[in-house]
Length: 86
Image 1 (spheres, rainbow, N blue to C red):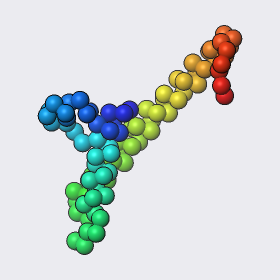
Image 2 (cartoon, rainbow, N blue to C red; image 1 turned 90 degrees about the horizontal axis):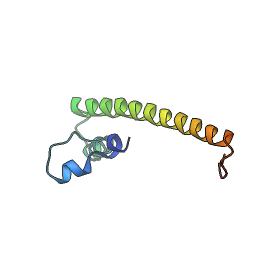
Image 3 (cartoon, rainbow, N blue to C red; image 1 turned 30 degrees about the vertical axis):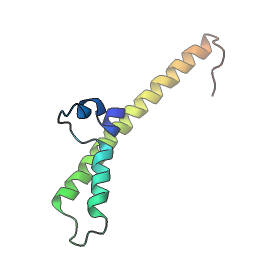
């Protein structure tokens, strides 16, 4: 999940070409549109679509993780493990 949101810092620090992260795309979109007087280009629109698609993927992954965490907490609680918070 972190790689989708923030990108692969290790690869990029070694000067490998990496796909822009969700944060990179959104930040670049914001930067390019700030005080833009020429209007929204097709590239801007496509980057917005990519951000929306990646956000949905990230959201589904996080929801899956939360479901698994809830199942683990339930199993631990049923086993009588102390310090399981709600």
